[in-house]
Amino acid sequence: MPAFTLYGSRGSTNTDRVRLTLAEGGFTDYELVLLNLQKGEQKSKEHEKRHPWGKIPAITSAEGFTLYESRAICKYLATKYSFPLLPSDSDVEAAALFDQAQCAEMLYFAEPAGRIAFEKFAKRFMGLHPDDAVVSNALRSVEMFFDIAERLLHHKDYMAGNDFTLVDIYYIPLIQRLFTCGYGDIIDSREAVSAWWDRCVNRPAIQRMLAADKEAAVAAA
Image (cartoon, rainbow, N blue to C red; front, top):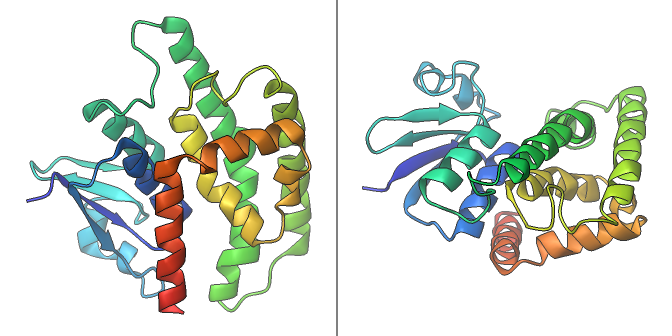
C-alpha cells in the first residue's frame, strides 16, 4: 500500500505544486488519483470528506490522515519525509524569512496570477471569453510584483534566501501558466528574475517531471 493518495487533476497548478515537491524530494511511494473537474468529481460527497470546499488537491495517508490545500500539503510532506526544502528549525531567522517569502508569494503573486490563469486558460475549456479588464488589472499587479522581486533577487539567489526552498516551488506552476498564456516576457525581461527562474526550472528533478508531463500532454492530444 502506498504511503498516501494524492487527489488532483492534470493541468491543475495546485496539484502540480505538490507533485513538484514530491519530485524534488525524490518521493514516489504514493498514488495519484486524477479527478475529472469538468464532470464535477471534486464536488462529490466522497471528495468533500477530504476537502470540505470541494477543491483539489487533497491527500489521505495509509493511516487515514487527510490534509487539503497545496501549500499545507507541501510543507507537511517536506517535514514528514525530510525533503531538504525547508529551513532548519533551529535557525529562527531563516524560518521567519521563509514564512515572509511564503506570504509574499500567496498575497502578491498567486492571487493576481491565478486570475490571469483563470481568465486566459481555464475559461477556454469552459467555453467562455476572458474578461479583458480583469486580465489587465491582474497583469499590472504581477508586473509590480516582479519589479520588486527583481530588486530583491539582485541580493539573493532564491525567494527566501540563498537556498532553494518550497517557496520557489510554489511559483513554478503559475509562472508556467503565464508563459502558456503568452506572458513569459514578464519573467524574461527582468535579468535577476529570469536568472532565478532558470535556476529553478533547470533543477534535474523538476526538469524530469516537466518533460514527462509534456510527453503525456502530446500523447493525449
